Image: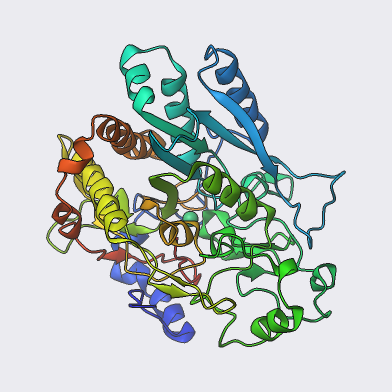
Length: 440
Ligand SMILES: [Zn+2]
């Protein structure tokens, strides 16, 4: 980690802060503050279930006159240690393709909902797919120059999680760590991003809920060595690596134990995109002490430092041209959002992190310019509140990106615009949980 921006609050102090929050009338404790009250209801009914998403994608493909190709790239939970089998597959992981993998064309890969409780990206992706599959002349001319592949909802298990008979989207995948299934000794420590008890921040911010299905944070399971597979490694080395806290941590790439991360990576390798975009949700910030507008989005073009693979010694770093393009892509997004409407323009840069096990980190180290889009709020905080505005915050920069790649005007964007995006500050802490805030 280069820098840790979040304050670590000791538990006792955190409790006393919560007890006094009403007396202090912190903005976040007001009924209409960004964090909803414990007893306020969260509504998710406008969001698509897995089944609704799949049906929508199939309809769009059918009406696209062959322009859109809908393929199943893989299924959730088919890892060697997975608790499902070939006969008992998880959910399909769809890839929507506009254009082929063609080195003579620019290409973009977009993924959404790597964390199952982060829905807006998927809702926005479906709108984008609808627009791209239409027969507009402008869109067709753009698609002649740019191939766009979209994987909406790459964590369908977390997205569709149920708890006590209720739809309860969670960050994590569904999968059990069974080391003996991949020829590691029973008792080998799980990768550090394993959620063994299946617990998650509660809806309505009401503490923590144990829904009881173990799983992984998929966005730590990627590795700059895109071909890393536990089954190909010396098992003694992997066992020692996992059993040592000095190595089993976020400074290193993940273990590709989830079928989801493997599937997304295979699509990345097939397309070898110029630009990779991953859409997330996060917490709440205001712009500054002087400007109390709520920040709808944070952006980042860099999320991983140069990396040396501890297993092979191979070195990875982000190429200079790739970094420049990444900054241009994010700078263009910043310019798009600052055009015209005031609250869209209240953007910040995502805090500085080094996470080689994220999809963005691993892919940036493999020649893709990246854009992290972090929309405010999650299904446990905002529910579907402000969904329309937040969807636009995702869509508008992406449409401009497609066109700028097609007419090559992306090359004229000044990367310094990215450097000048205000840093993340003025985080509004959640008054009602002691939950550690997660990175993207
Ligand atoms: Zn996320």
